[in-house]
Length: 471
Ligand SMILES: [Zn+2]
Image 1 (cartoon, helix red, strand yellow):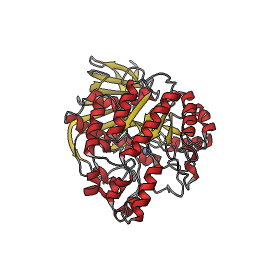
Image 2 (cartoon, protein in one colour):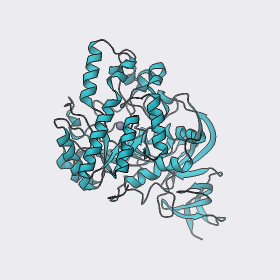
Image 3 (cartoon, protein in one colour):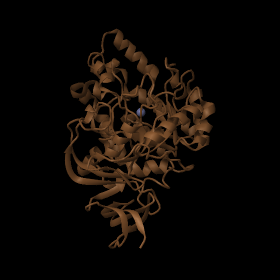
Image 4 (cartoon, protein in one colour):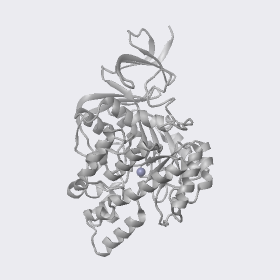
């Protein structure tokens, strides 16, 4: 009898629309067989899933590694190893890193190669990169796509930044004409253009006025970032996508107005996806002002209860396609100044270690079933971004990326003991029900019972297939 690498016994395997009691037989990193009878097989290693649910590994389409390190993102900050240790701990088997996380940015072929060289040595889980698409690098878009970026990212910022690194990922120096040209170029690659939709001219004007009036307390942040800012840029993005035929994703959608626009755009046949994050589903502006302070600052900001409710409705109706983390791991020192002046605090929160427990908890509360959860956190990301031949499902022949989740286990999320180097205050102390207990990437166990076992350098770059016309 031949021997396989890994046998996972007693799984309740979550497939597309059913749960199957089975054993997973894994060899050379792939699912070789799903056995519903007694498995008479020799394996180098056997894991007992103890009749827990086994779901496809989560895919986070939105993280910021803070690599390559630079004077602004020094080496004591998050790196590929700490970020992917957090991923393994949180049930993520693949992460997509954003283009302006350090220097050089992933806005040129050279930038792509430098970052990939670092990630190849440091990542514990599989990964891919976004390429920047902006004012200064329209000519690089095709070569970045050929090199293997999984998608592109643009911020709808028009004010020219002091830091020129950003020129390949914003509109700076251009307006809708530049936006149109970028979209058209990305459309030709077949890749998704993920868009950070905020109107920086409006935000800049409001923030300057508030500062000049000496209004810098926590609530001033909300006054500077009204829903109108997201509305205007989502509207522009949708109309330009319709004109150019680009496939777009609204990154971290946060408002009721934007959700309703995406819903209409989908019904008109625009090739559009929408992503939101656990913090927009679970927190509001009041939580920041009353409790979190600068640790609850991110952009776009936490919104009102009305927006939060609208996001859940959009999620239920299928308007929201992805739950991502927007893992933006700033150290505590970058957040603290915000207590005195909120405009001085860094924007962004970590999320890789909290997203799955939080969503499993919402599942236990009846907000969605396990199939929808897997759809939002693994299956749809894989399909939309063109990696569904290998990732985002538990079928024979696919990568053996899976997470054993104990949906009945209760725990308290604690900042201490997390693997991110960021200050994870945002969900500190939250009671959850449902936690990942084992994470495997291509058949290799990278986390078991909260202990990260994966080795830096094990993670591989995931190259996407062509995905034209799929939505
Ligand atoms: Zn982000």
